[in-house]
Image (cartoon, rainbow over all chains, first blue to last red; front, side, top):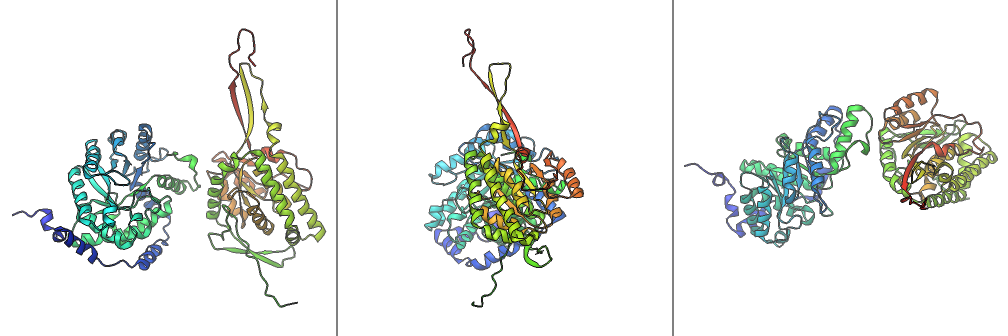
Length: 319
Length: 295
């Protein structure tokens, strides 16, 4: 008798009921906050220079989910973004393309057309992004729209209200439902909005909850609140995906988003990935940066390495 | 007299309105004209230069967009603050240049007067170098001066304070922002001037002061793609040539070193106009009816 993936899953039992799930999540070891921050800070002091830096910059560019999530997004802006994602630096054709463009569901079709044939993916936020305050049928309709328009990846937000109130099963069921709508066509990124989860323990619980529910990626934040991706919370999530793979054999990606603006920051995150999850994650299939202005800084640094001259914002596109 | 411990001053850089140490952690010894140790000054690296350019670029929009009248007020305020710290500057200039107290005082007074002089020019330069152009069509055609952008200023090596003020004030008077490389062997008056600027309404980043080896800091500034112009006043002949070549890559505006015998002489407006661009706009005057001009 063939065993299905879920049957082989050693953690299947924990999602049997609300109480088993709660017991499991609250049974996860508590996070040593001071140790976590110290570890993240010490890994941030690594000096990455010359050829290693050039490699890291190209890798980081290839991991960018180039994002525009504004009320004022126009088809023209999305097309411009798509063109930039495909060829970030038109003056240097050796520059790699970014991993994806990330837009609202109604812009997916435009984005899809803009990156057609390039290998750049189209990611769409959904489920009443960024607040996630809508009824489940509405959220599912949102996802269905995005997938129907051709989104390769769906970035959903969890219901933080339910999570903080302790209704873990509700959050779990929602993710599972969204996962089903995504089907086999779209990879699912689950956004926890770590800035709203208050504690590191909660971030660890949310990470496991998301992975148990079938997330392909766990993502820190929407970029719409005061605290977004930090080295510490990303490190915590990287530990979670590492441990999850060790227990279940299933690899899950990580996407820090929001607040990463400089090449230096991006390289610090890559060091975290390498030292925590390992080399298997140093690929844009498993690690992404949700960012917009980061790409320009990466391009300017790349130009500096290539020419020896400091570059400036006049030599990259404005958006 | 009580036995007090010496409170020695830690001279620091001035970048983006803050007083950081050099990113490199280096300092170098600054001596007076006779070789006696005065203080340690930060020895900036190319990364300090890069950070200063970022700060200057960030400040440019606000400073260039401020009204000329407002810039004049701010520069006048600098003169007021300098006047209040006159004794300190006389002391520092006397040490730095080996001058007597009275000679140093003349230099400082001339420097204060120079700020006032340039403060007055902020809202007058447009009338002198701009204007209405006669054109063969129903248009007003107006030319007005616009600041060039971020200007790297290599301050004169010999005149550590009056020379510095004479090259810096005209750059910022017209709305440019500046990255100043202080005199290599006498940087202390420049670093103290930064403290005056920080307390006189000049927005952070409009002036950034670096000390260190002029050649080391100037090279990345000259080749920097985001620096729009460079004043080579403090470069010797060999260095000036190298920098001018490096600056050619992004078509930087270059002001070559000008021989100056007497910094106290009235400077004229050459330094004001060196870092200005001319913007010309065509404005329709409306239809010229059968009756002739409508204005």
